[in-house]
Image 1 (tube, one colour):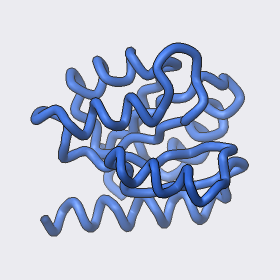
Image 2 (spheres, one colour):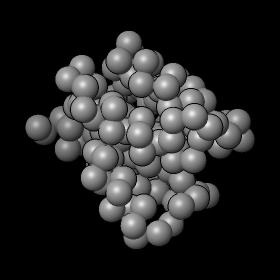
Image 3 (cartoon, rainbow, N blue to C red):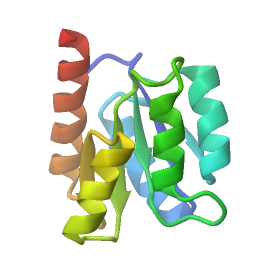
Length: 128
């Protein structure tokens, strides 16, 4: 993977952010992390990352709401979003997809699965 690939992490758990950054930095990704959905929307519009990792359960705006907002704005609708959450119900997966998420991973996220999902979505984005 190229050093220029940028992942925006939107998660209010400092421990999860550290874990994601550790995995991503070890695989040559550049990361930016924010801890609210509102801030994630603003940063996504400003930085235009290659992909977003989005928690669902956060204070204020939840990840479903932030995903819907990001995927409905022209400037950011092309950015693939992977939901990363402890919520493992089929209804949550379906709802995430309806909001525009392209992937859904359950915490604790397996490192290889995280990297393969990112790679797959970036390949799809490149081909479209």
